[in-house]
Image (cartoon, rainbow, N blue to C red; front, top):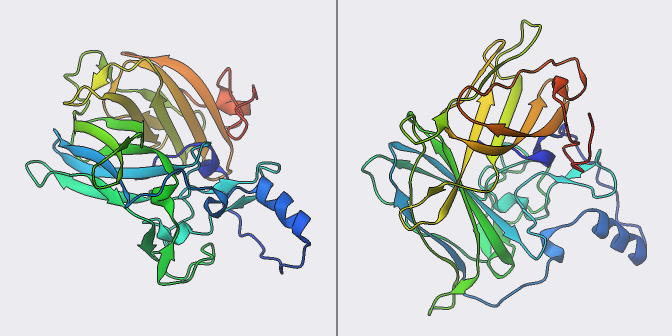
Length: 313
């Protein structure tokens, strides 16, 4: 379910916990290299934070919720990468508050299922603490039953990602906590209801592609495509929607759900080797993305490093 961006495609490595013997100056250097939500200052004092989504005009699916903290919009539920050594990965000290922290090292903060004609999604409300959901996995350092993280006072931005359960396309909605309710909650303001992308949407298409060579194991290769501005879809309250596609291979074939025409930032990863790259492409009806696994950047011109986004190919 989880669509992935650069740091999550890095190979998973178990970090070795060293005894805390360094002097204070060395600890400060380590913190600078490995940002953590515990070191982010509050931007407000509130009773909580809410994302005011009213529902989805959809046949059903799952809505994933990301929250970002501080001026750099740090995501505490993603696998983190050391800022000076991209080979070193780690999890936030409060990662156990993230819904799927017990399953793996990248998660949504929350995800919510919805069905056609079912209850409205309603506002996503959170505060400064959550139950520990990690189940004792070694990548979670907080083992308390209640994880007190203070994220509602540090949250500056949010993202909702809608994964369709039926014949619809993925939708991503993003925004900031720039408003405040009378009850002193940081708020997104009214977003309205999500409107999905379907084959009947003007300019819609299905991205296809092939993988040279093989045979390849199913789901070895993953392509995540995120629409860039300008966006053409809106919610029922005219809030901008971004299209996105998640493609995993079936043998040598790639095929997406419905997507809306536009410019896309595309993340490609080989889960068997960890090789990955980013490319920017204008996509629409008839578009293809063909991969050559043994070539640099999968044979894609203009490939970028997934951690630094500097040219690779």
